[in-house]
Amino acid sequence: MKNIKTMQLILGLTFTFLFTTLGSAQDITQNKPHEEMEIAAKDRVDKWDDELSLTAKQALLLQKKFVEFDIKREEVFNANIPEKEEKLNRLKDLKILETREIRDILTKPQFDRYIQLLEEEAKRSNLQSSSGPGK
Image: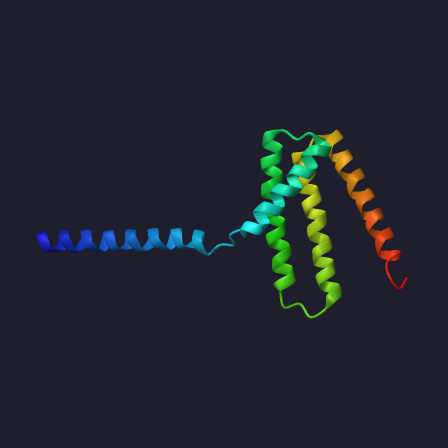
C-alpha cells in the first residue's frame, strides 16, 4: 500500500514538473522583441510625445504597440511570400490595424493630430522620392 502511494506521488510530481516546464518553455520560444526594436520604439514614442503630449500610460502603451507591430512586420518580411504585391498588401493591412489600435490609445484630438502628421510625413516622403536623382 505504501509503495502505491509513493508511486502515485512520484508520478504526480513528474507530471507536475513536466507540465510546468512545458508551460514556461512557451514563454521562452515566443517572439521576443529585439533590443533594437525596443530602442526604436522608445525613440518613436519620444517623437510622438513631443507632438501629442502623451501621458505616461499612453507612452508605455504606444511603445508596446510599436514593438508588437515591428515584430509582425519583420515576420512578413521574413515570410516566404514570392509575390512582392502580396507582401505589400500584408504590410499595408498591418499599418491599418496598427493605426486602429493606436486610435484606441490616443484621445480624439491626439489621434487627429497623429493622422495629420502622418499625412504630412507621407507627402514629404513622396516629394523627396519624386525629386530624387534621375527623376
